[in-house]
Image (spheres, rainbow, N blue to C red):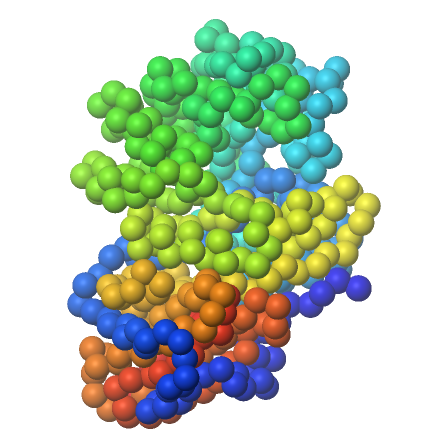
Length: 466
């Protein structure tokens, strides 16, 4: 049987033993206690949500029997029993040349145009099923992106990339490709009542690993061609009467995204609403953040993934991105993956096996996505091992603490800036290899909460007044 998700209600039954109540600390701890100071008056980005790409798992899981499929959806999108993700990125497939069979089953996202001038709107039923159910369960931000143009628009005749890894979109097909994306988005809006707020023609377009014979769709589109394609996409969006904005460039690294942005002409920049970046690589987060702010552009971290099943590497990247890059949304690559460690859940994605296993990474993601909810605003916290936000609607302050070391660490959370009077704190704790998301409740009037975090753990503290 597949594993079940652990709900907050179930977590209430278990009291965490690794938390020191106010006024207490472990004097035997090897490291000195670090005081976490908050400044609620210093505010940063407002959160739109945590998200996931629907490539490639959704077109496989979407074909599972409804009872099984709903279990997956509950784990990923339910805000109480699951991760509560609210951002989804739909992959508009290019569709491979039928004479080639390079692409893995899980990555073979069907395209909608098997040949020029022909559209098959019965394609990609699985991913569309997942998209619609995600929206019904509370996903409020939808974006469409494309890994490759249809095969007949490419230099190599394949959606896997060009021979040698260069530009693969034929120049004479640029207008047709922009129109393809707009036609698909218009069909979703008018026939499925699904509106993509943002539309993106690229995925890691300046990367050179998109080569003919690859196991997935991908297309190198250099900066020069992007400067041509973005205005064409804007014209196609307008001609089809779409209320969608353009996102770009979605490069693999933060530094590449910054270079691509700087290569755009003033006209191209003016047509872009949202700067998307992946954060697999790169380090110049502050420079990209400032570039987006100076240009008045929205900013997303639109894709990150890693093979660490413990979730510790991902947690560190979340802290780096949300504290330094400050995107409005943070999007993980695949919720379900056949490469162990890469997804929150494991399934072979071969179309026949339907059971899944949950990685520790799932519970680490929950430590962020269940408690930092859309609408909250991130605030200053003094330690790079923390993330803090204030939610005016719920009258809560939420703080996540990460200990990705291999020894215990002690923290003191200073509640003085929150104000005087009694407070209620719910502390959710997850340690790699142990039971997920245990909870402790504290009520007090003292100004500090002392915590002893075991090795490789994440604690999330929600404090409310009254």
